[in-house]
Image 1 (cartoon, helix red, strand yellow):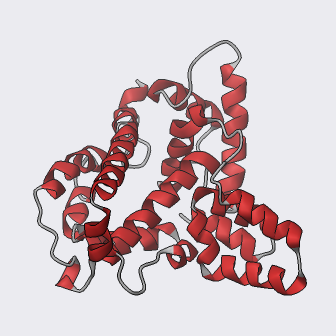
Image 2 (cartoon, rainbow, N blue to C red; image 1 turned 120 degrees about the vertical axis):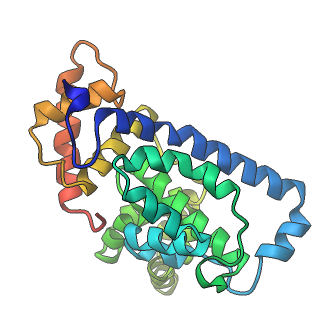
Image 3 (cartoon, rainbow, N blue to C red; image 1 turned 30 degrees about the vertical axis):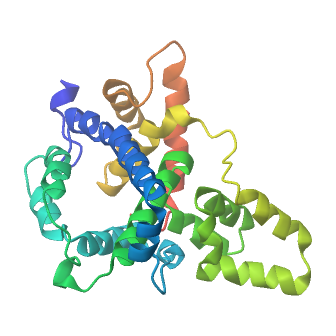
Length: 263
């Protein structure tokens, strides 16, 4: 049965459990924004310290960023324990309740500030937003921008306007100012509105599935096997003609991941 088949360390049931984290992350973000809006003065006093920024974190591979965040959050040991479990995804689902009971005291070694914590948190959520919308991490878009692909830079800015303040973003904006490239500067301004166009939101689970398979070195499996997995775990609705659509999406995902910086 497909539910018993392993994809690296993952089963179909593990993927279904992973999808449950998506609405939970959205809820956590909403609650954080509500707390900040409720007491903006307290927020400013605690977090808005000199050097409070995170755009530079979009320049590093996501696995490196994630390891940094876990250390800053002080949960690196708890996550390392979860990863060693027979079902790491299910263990990860239990982490929020474990972390909620922990008192943050500067992260690993107690050397981080509240501003570090919030900055890393924003960088991680920005990368996850990018993955769910564009199918890749933000550092992949930034990497393409460094090679001269300005559309990728604009996409990065649409995900998080602060990306314009990172090393790559500020470099190209500075060039545009010197050259008087008003068209590009207008495009940057429009991108900062955060509109990501008509990216299909119903593909969020599918994009997450492709990334997890990619990171588990399982995306090279036969397309027909991955199509069935996508249907089985609810990453794409089974319907007449859907198999052809999913096959094409998988082909595109394989091409995209092959050229990606992050893994």
